[in-house]
Structure formats: C-alpha cells, structure tokens
Image (cartoon, rainbow, N blue to C red):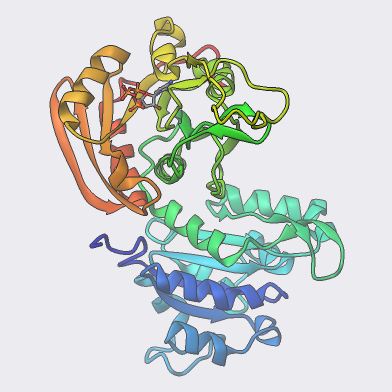
Length: 413
Ligand code: CTP
C-alpha cells in the first residue's frame, strides 16, 4: 500500500515534565516515529528522575535537550531554534506543576521557555496531563488548565482509571497509542467542524433460536474507519453498530445493537439530530419470522426445521424518506459481487439518496484495504485501493464537498 504514514513530514517537539507517566513517553516516541514523524525530545530535570535521556535519545534518534544553557546549540538558543521548524509541541506527561508554569508563562527552564517562545501561529501546543486525581480535581489545577486552553493550548485527556499511587480516578495520562491517534487527528483538516454524523456499521445478527442466527462477513472495519475519519474532521459522531470486535474510535459515541430491527430502533430517534447519515452496515435482508424461545433440537426425522423469513426494514431508505426538516444528508454503501456501477445507480434511485459508495463485498470483507466507487447524479469517481482509514478520510472530504450549506437544526444537540 502506497499511502504515506499519517504523520509523514511532521516534526514534533515532545516535552516530558516530571511524572511516573514518563514511562509511557518512551512508547509514545516509538508510535510517533512509526506514524512518520520526526521527534525532538525535551525533558525537564524532574522528568529525568523518572526516565533517562539515554532511553529517549535512543528511541527518537536525536540527542535530548534539557537545559537552556546547552552549549550544543551553536547560538546557544535552544529555546528558539527547537520550535522554529516544529509542526507542534506535545507535552506528555504534563504535570500539575508544569501546567501551572504554563498558565503563568514561566520561562525559568528550557521546556517552559520554549513553549513561551514558540511561534503561536505555526506551532500549536498540546498537553497530556498526568497526575493524581486529587491534584487534577483541585481548583488551582482546573483554573490553570482553563487558562492554558484560553491561551490556545489543546488538552488531551486525562483518562480515568487506576493510578500509580493506588487511587482510582481522573488524571491518568492517555496511552501512547491514544496520544498518537490524537496527534494524527489534530493535523487532519476540520472539514466537518460543527457538523454531526450518524452511522451504521458492521453486520446484523438475526436470531433463529437462543444459540443460532443468520449473519454475514462484514467486519465493520470500513464503517469504523469512516466514523474515526469523521471525528478527526471535527464532526460529532454517533455510531450504531452490529456485533463486531473493534474498539470504538476516540471521541465517537457508540450504540451497540444486534438485529436489523434494533438497528432501526436506534437510528430513527437519532436521525433528526444529525446532519449526515452514512449507512455502512451490512444489514441482513431477511430475519427468521419467529425466533424460537428454546434451542431447536433435531427431531430424529432427518428433516431440517422449516424456517419462514420476514423481510427486514430498509434502514437507509427509511431515513432518506424522513420529512426534509428531519432528514440528514444520506450516504449509502453498496456491497456487490459484480456489475458495481449498474447496481450502485439502481440503489441511488431506489433508496433516494444523493450518494452511493460502492465496493466489491467479497474483495473487502475483513480486509484492511479496499477501493471505493462513488456514484452520484454527477457521475462516478473511483477512490483507488488503499488502507480503509485513508479511504475513509478521502470519503469524508468527498462528503464535505457535496454537503449543502449548514442549516440550523432546531433539534440539534
Ligand atoms: N441498508 C439498510 N437497511 C437494509 C438493507 C440495506 O440500511 N435493510 C443499507 C446499507 O447499510 C447500505 C445500503 O443500504 O448503505 C445498501 O445495502 P446493500 O446490502 O448493498 O443493498 P440492499 O438494499 O440490501 O440490496 P441487495 O441486497 O439487493 O443488493
């Protein structure tokens, strides 16, 4: 696959202040480098109590800076030079003390100094707090966090959970993979800022009896990728999903369902609250007309039980038929085995939606890559084979370009 890594071309200054979460920063450097970024590590004296500069140098491939008096910089102005080429400064972990320093604009050690001296327009500051829950909840910390946000910083996390001190609560630094995903998301264009997206994804499972049912090979990967891409693009995203084994993309609200009827029940009240509806779910077309209360047993006759089927409602078509003031802008997917364009056009008409995204089902189910064909009134456009997340980002851009201008929705959350 030829898609460049998501952070290719990005140069990041990773600042570490003192905290036990420094152990996660080693992994974070690896994740950022794996995602294509170059990373310059800057550590406070306190950070060096928790992890050595040697480790961080080895992982980043660059000598670590920790002092504003570092003579390695020819002009002795590390605080200036380090951020001039940087795409962003990420402080992870950001201790309560360091956040307080940022809030005050203190410049008495290198990391605080370079945050203050960075060019505000070109070098954004992101901080990942890490501290004991009482420290996080303290009004002084909350005041300082509000101040740095007002000054333009982006705060990532913190998460809730077990803390090194043995207590449980808010204040854990996000995990390395989560922080890396946050950085990737941060750099994505905010094409759907202020918009909301409702999605369906995955297969549905139609019960025959308590232990069996009818389902299909949809893994949900494409739908989850679109949900992630929409969230990265700044949208508020609600994802209604059938049974899949996938983690929820960060910032996405997830509603789990099993059957097509449950999916419809979850989607209908949500639809008028959203600007866009993207139906990626492989909804079972039929369900057993009745689901047996107990497991159906062999009766010894050698004859299989006769199953009667009922047709499931078409969720996409139902949403597309809502009255205009309650109807989101609808995008359908079409998984076909052949004759992609003809079937996609036919679905565009039959379901009454402005855009159908067609793909070859057997060639994509469960895989990490795919290719898509966009079919709308204007014609067809191919998005060539790539990993599903890259395709999802392209699709989000295509949707954003086709959206009618934002209109105020009385019911929007
Ligand atoms: N869809 C839906 N509800 C259904 C069936 C399909 O919302 N009961 C949506 C899918 O999520 C997808 C689009 O309709 O966005 C097309 O789904 P697909 O299974 O390809 O088409 P069908 O309408 O089922 O037509 P066919 O089985 O004849 O290909």
